[in-house]
Length: 306
Image: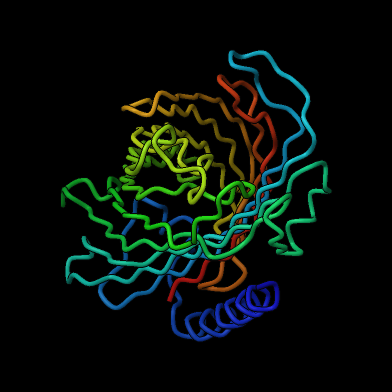
């Protein structure tokens, strides 16, 4: 598994570099960091590939309320690859595919232990976890900076009873609404996002512990509702710095479990070529409720537009 995943990462990165160089030779337009925000859709025939990696690590979580308590370090690595293309002449419909690879370690292991991609099931799990067909739509022609993305994630990993947690064993239907507004002579931008994610599946209390992983069904029959805002500053047309805040709720719709958390963060983006962007960010969960982790997320992304 480790060799397969590392090979995939290398091939994807090399492919991005090749695509971006070709696009850079042909496209002499404006910086895509400013033009292609999450609210902006692709023209027909354009492609957008994003390779996003995040490492979340925690040594604290809340108790059943909001009081913090120490725990042995836990680490969660997620690679999300998104591939979209424009299919409409008016640049108002995009279709795509999203898939994820995860690696988790437990029991006080170091944060970088996730990159071993071990899978001993006791204190480490890794593998391909989800795949999702996706569609992006700009519903109003006169509001080009408003759009939504709707995706259905299917869990493709096998059940491992009594094993460490890998991912949610859910069918997850998520719709994200995006809106951005540029101001200050083009130097500033506010971006907002509202997500509605429904987790469908068997209740954890009804799972068969002999054949199913009960812990991976904790979110089934719930609504995940994160609300996010980003304030960006553009020092140049090839770079941006941003701060962000997110308030998220896991709302019980029948599984007798709910959570909430508040996260703050900052980051930046830089355009390496006409088509290739890099993004780095840091996030910290500052408050939570009901066994919510209070950790940090370190993220690095590569995006190719051509």
